[in-house]
Image (spheres, each protein chain N blue to C red):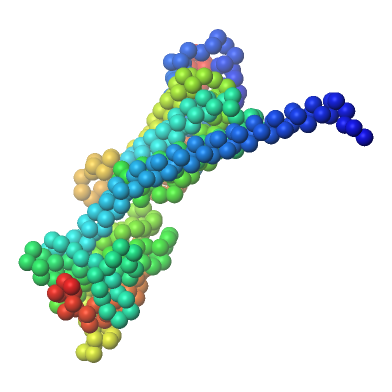
Length: 228
Length: 213
C-alpha cells in the first residue's frame, strides 16, 4: 500500500528535525572540541613550567644549601641521568661548588583522607633525613594537615636517623612514628595528638620508602657525587 | 523557586538591563534566595581566597555559557537542548580548569575536584534553561554578571566568616594574637552548614522586615 500524503509529509518533517538535531550536536561538539584543544595547547607550556618550579622549590626546601639540582633515574641496578620520560627518579642537590648536599626522594602512601605525596631529603654523609615537605595532601584542615604546619612535628625531620648496616643492604632501624612526647631514639618520629593517623602515615611512608631507596642511593653515591 | 521568581519579574514591565543585573546580586541571589549550587558553596568556602576563586570560576563559566546559549538559541532544537547546554558548560569548565592550573598550582590544588564539578552546578544550567535560551545576548550577559556576582558575593560572605572564625586569619593574614584558639569546626564541613544557616537567617529576616513595610 502506498503511504498517504500526510504520512509522507510527516516523514519529511521528522527527517528534517533529525537533521537539525544532528547539525546542532555535531556543530556544538566541533566548536567545543576546538576551544578545549586551543586552551590546552595555549596553557600547557606555562603549566609545565609552574609544576617544575614547584618541584624545584620543594627540593631546595628539603636539602638545605642546594643551588642546583639534577634528576637521576634508577634502572634496576644503577642510576643514570634521567631523560624526559624516566620513572623511578630521585633528585640530587649540589651547592655552588658542585658538592653533593643531599638527595631528594618522592614517596607516597595512604593517609587518613587520601594518598599523601611527600618529598624528603637524605644526607648520605650523615645518613640522616634532613628535610621533609608535603607535595600533595587532602588531610582534614585543622587536624590532619598539621603534618604540614606543626613546628614540633616538622622538627623531627632535621636529623632523622636512617643509618645502613655495614654491607649497605638494610636500614638498621626502620623509621616509625611514636606517640607524642615519647620519642627516645633518633629514628623515631614524634607523632601529633589529634592527627594520629596522618602522622603515623608519614612514618610509614618514610619507613617503607627508605627501605628501598636508601641502600640504592648509598651504593651508587660515587656516580651522583661526580654528577655523571 | 527560581522559576516562580523569575516569571513574576518578567510578567511586569519588561525589565531593564540594570534590573537584570541587580536581581541576581540581591533580590534573587542564587545562594541566599534561590539556594542553588550548594555543593561548592559548602565545600569550597573554608577560606576567603578559595571562596573568591571558586566564585569567580563559576561566574566565568556562567557568563560564557549564557553568551553561547543565547546566541545559539535558534540553532539548538528543543529536543537536544539539555545535552547541548551540558556540552557547552563542560567545555568552559575544562577551559577554566586549564586556566587556573596555568595561573597557580597552589590554587588548583586547594580547589581540587570542585572545579570539574562546576559542570553540574545547577545554577548554571538553570540560567541557561530559564533565561539565556529565551533572551537576547545582551540581556543574558547582564543576567550572568548579576547571578555570577551574587554567587561570588555569597561565597565570599561564607568564606570570610569561616576563615576568620576557624583559622583566625583573613586572606592568610593573622588577625588574632599568638595563642588564639581558633574554632576549628568552622573550616570543617559542619562549619559550612552553620555559616550558611546563619546567613540564610539574616537574609530572611531582612526580607521579612522589608515585606512588612
